Length: 194
Image (cartoon, rainbow, N blue to C red; front, side, top):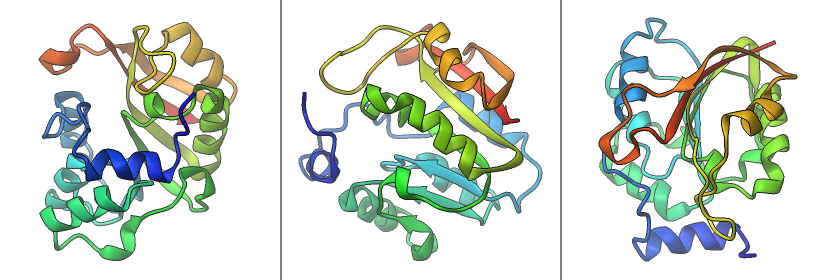
């Protein structure tokens, strides 16, 4: 099994090997963001990569956005593209070492990139980071994928087993507006911290 460490992810960006990056914000998240009204929400995007989501939110008046990635190169790419984004909100640390309180956490290809053995820990960490009634919002792949390297797929039933203890399921269904390349392969979720 490959080591999904800081070097692994930084090398991906240094070598421009990030085929999961579609080059823009995806439709399900864009439409969700468009209906969000409270611009003061504290929002986190873990495993942010090039983070078109953070750019979109920031350009639409949300200023309390934090992005986290193992890869210094990914964060550097983002800062070059969005130079006015506050540098102190670019966090180059292990997601599991975060200690902050957030209102919304956005899931976009982070869950499928972590070691499958850490999925239960991911659900617990999300719960710990969110404020009361805070939300975990985003997309999960609902298909089998690679077993020995990311992206790792899964199933709705598997995901429910991780989240059922700490979250109320507001929405957890097949995404109706996925981008063409991911159509029929994603679940859209809005999970609220219990």
